[in-house]
Image 1 (tube, rainbow, N blue to C red):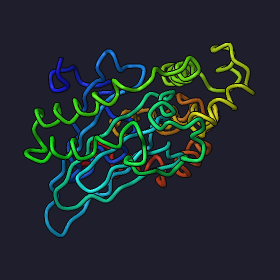
Image 2: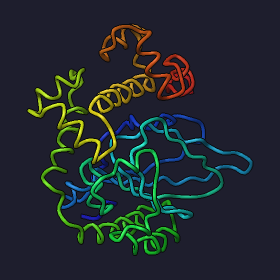
Image 3: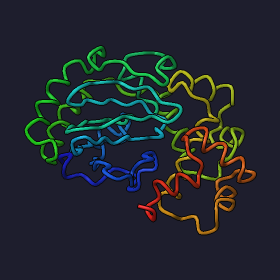
Image 4: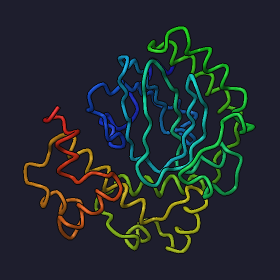
Length: 282
């Protein structure tokens, strides 16, 4: 099945994208991974933008706990996880083809045995032996018509050809992906102790392995899941009970703790974020 014909990727509402409802926010086309690549790839995404002259858009994202491969018309990068808020300025016309890797797949793609030094930074895709050949081919596939699903399918097919040559994700890498899935799928997990009990893994091992694969801590995973849920709720305007009730539902002891946590990572208070980017206010 071609990428263009696949079902949309998971998360029909993008919790990670803070500026989803912002004026002039570009469309982001999403495609599911081929079945043979699901241990490597979460999904592909293709933003295409055409910003009016003299204007720009600041895309802001709370990244999922994954490494990314991004090839655009002007750069190509392998990103480690960004622990805070990431942002990029968009102007004029442009596009990018992105691969969101599975949490445990970054080592396979990068050829490294420790990704902690890539936390919050990136390297050029051309420096990766597994991906050095794809940049020119992806750009050739996208250039004729960047907005066309057929162009997206051709670009993703190029990437898939390289993925086919990669070694399998290790058992430990698959375990990391499973740990992240447990956290993201269970909002009742509030503490690292609870995560250890559910996964049958010691806190020391969780700390050590997650640091090598993602540069992160188990506590970060839980906090990021909470903040993704919070931004989703605030964007959709589902806060009829007020911010205090939302804080309790997310597992915070009170609204003040929620507000501090949210502001420290996103740069907004929950109320300001809802007013700025909530669908009801746009």
